[in-house]
Image (tube, rainbow, N blue to C red):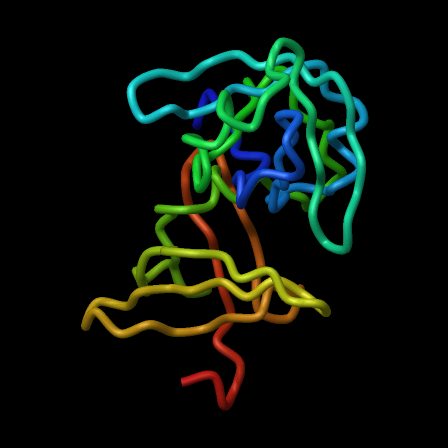
Length: 167
């Protein structure tokens, strides 16, 4: 399991006072509860205390303590923001962190290996799992109960039922 979870990506600056626009990779309201994030500078994870949170369309606007000028933050465009796992929200039953699903072995109901989970696409209705099969082809599986039978994060195995028409 990952020790850090990605919560967003800095898209651009906002104004001249050091604010940034962030594309959230978690529930946008989550930023209201965070005291800090870890900025991946490319060389290290820099701890930035969150001073203010605002919203604009689908983006979160963050102001960090001690960063008061556009020049102090502009170099971090396109950089990821992370939090330690212990700061993460509690999950409901049958909810998982995407970081815990990526790389998971995907098996059929009879236990035979089907492929590896490569990505999770977040759509409006339900997530879609991108699975690479043994031939290297991508198969898209809807994250619904009829298709995803079991997810065992500890064993790193997802058991699926291939519904007609998926392949």
